[in-house]
Length: 494
Image (cartoon, rainbow, N blue to C red):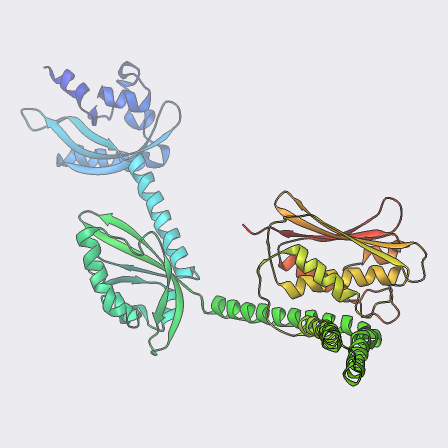
């Protein structure tokens, strides 16, 4: 292989200059880099063709020094390619001498370092950016080596844990952990390196941190891993969640208080309904009590007589008196259950039984003269998951609203229906009354909105809360002929 062939296969840039700086040789690597052909540049001074104007003086000085001393040297300068691109070249220079020691040629071997410098510059910028981000991060960022020794500790970590970086760098990271985390940590690190079992790395979890002053606080910890050569490094990203926990506790307490208020309102609503019933409640109880008294007096008269069938007659009147006593007791039991205050307790129940009992309860003390009340309850309905008393309260509210709306109306009628429809049970109370005033209808389910002179305006609002708490929906619509239909849904037991 000739010298020319050797120069062309070299990956390095090779130029040969005469003592006046004119190009004598320009190898293939130079051609590929610059876009010039060797034939186009041979015989021209290198600083006129390739060297950037800003570097021409420096290159000329290096060339003169090399030509005079003959000692190898090095330098770096920019070349300008045929397309105008600027490339940074680092050179190692030597000379070729004749028999008398005179310099005949200057030989430069160069390496294009443009891309390397760009990468290094980008790395420096990225490193500076990363350091800035770490320094200004609101979260603590801590790096440790494979032995769990702290290698870096950012400003947020100093503020969070109360240590200066110099106080903890080189120490085991478990100094930032209370027991039992401290005792468990080294074992975890050892087990991970032996088995690869991850418990936090790449997963994250909430743990407890330990400050320099010995106080503890909740933190959210995420750990990332990187392998550098044959060793692992770990970076922990730590967020103080004390305020978040406090906010969660406040929210939890607020929700609990809201639930208590809701329960209280529900209870007040039932008491309000009972207050409306109380005026005429004596009439309902008076009937069975009067009947009991009459039956007992009849029995006394039979005892004083000499009737041969006295025994059978006494048994009959006592049986009837017992039935009336049971009737009065049942009225009182239902009322006590209805107004009793207690926690919401949902369980599977038969909706038709609940509706039937609620209808009986709603009619206690109600002025229903002339009102025809009918029920159309679909048979064999599946169970619903409900609080029995609360759903009765909804039905009572709807029924009594219809009864009040029909007061004084001839041919008044109320129809109570239940039916199953695609995974729900639908309960409706429809009347043929005057319907709803538009202004009232728009605010119908808002609290303290009422058309009754003595009403509190919370019945329908509470009813909506109860139904929605049961996973259902309540609404109202005008009936085709006259009046309105209130209806609500309840999900079936899954």
